[in-house]
Image (cartoon, rainbow, N blue to C red; front, side, top):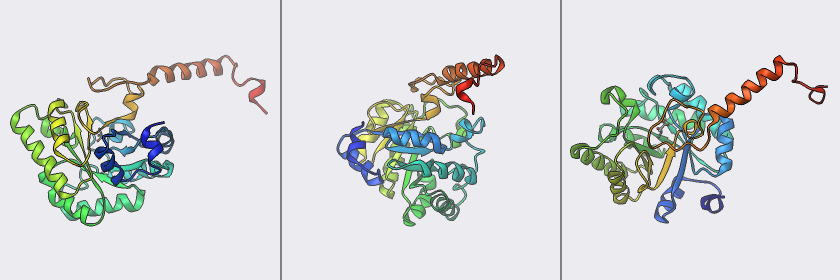
Length: 272
Ligand code: KIV
């Protein structure tokens, strides 16, 4: 059992800031449905992220752009129904907050009201400052997301490491400081050099949770389906696979097909 599982009955945004202050790393994984969320919550995950990566993982889209607010609310509702302890953070999807602060607030309110999630996450820094302020003013906790921001993939052109050059690294640091000043409770840093990520984490009192950002940050997040090997086409350097479920599940399904075809299943004990 994790230290946090013993110490905290229910994770709040305050517990995460406390964990950072105490030097305890934060564990976060994605969840898009009730059954997986139940397992993750029971395993002691501090944060479950209903990521817009559901667009890739659950719906098979090439990018995160197509997923809608209604679909995010559907995924998040199942996750919220499963949890007893973890904090549930829900991504605001592409197109639900970029046009103006009022639209951003309306989208965030829909997520909180209709899914029961505990906080929202959105991508970007100074460009979306007014939207973040408006959401925070309504009492909704906000997690930032800097570095590789997949909703802007067509601007970047590739999924390669961000902020390797000084100018971009400096902008990232300024944005991180801004997000803290505005009142965000945590920041995700995706695919940036480990040294820069560590520097950002050390400059902030709010937790920095990394994905492909090294070990000098305050916590780690991965896409669950990648770390348990259900997906198998994706091999970034930062991904540690804890299981090979694609292979194991394929074996089980093949066995089932064979058992049905050979009339081995069901046997006498498996019928009424
Ligand atoms: O949508 C997502 O899964 C994310 C993580 C990769 C941080 O934003």
